[in-house]
Length: 101
Figure 1 (tube, rainbow, N blue to C red):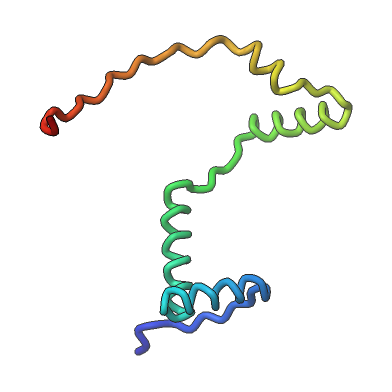
Figure 2 (figure 1 turned 180 degrees about the vertical axis):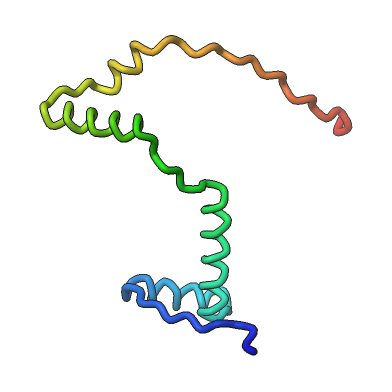
């Protein structure tokens, strides 16, 4: 039984040129580059799983699109001015090393 599987994929010429450039610069194979890219993608996808929108989310999006189509928009600056101020969190200064005197 094979320890690997064969993957065939189509990519745009510009992307292939970048693969070839990295392959040469890093002295790696295409397969190594693709495996690393997929590992990075899987790790990122695990950190940010896709969430299904609620019925309320969908209603709000539809309402926002309707208002936008009617020209009922509000500049972001106005929205930000109307938000309540955020409480300021004080941070403790990190202890400085005194060993280098």
